[in-house]
Figure (cartoon, rainbow, N blue to C red):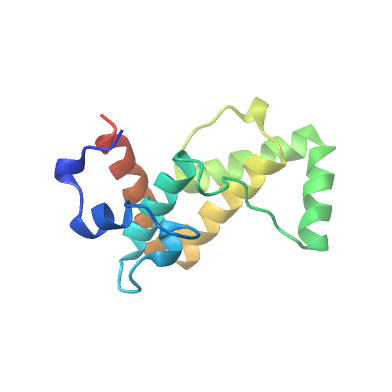
Length: 131
């Protein structure tokens, strides 16, 4: 549940029923990226958006399939990503999805740090609003 008394009025308005599609699609174009990410997280939690993302790329697919068949190399790659992000995870549970998740985060942190920080802020907001 979200504490409605502390939320941004623009986000509150967007939470209302939307006649078609996603509330995120209806969002004001001036909405900050952190607010768009937060709204997307809420829509994922509410089942309005799919939490699955896919990549259509033969080279990426080949790398992921190769890693999926080499546990040691998979753990090496995941460990390297974790170090770059300054975090620890259970490498034993690493799979193709883990590699993609971490790769996107590492790429955003390096190439678009403002988006990476906005995503962290949106996640923090969701956690604290649900408290």
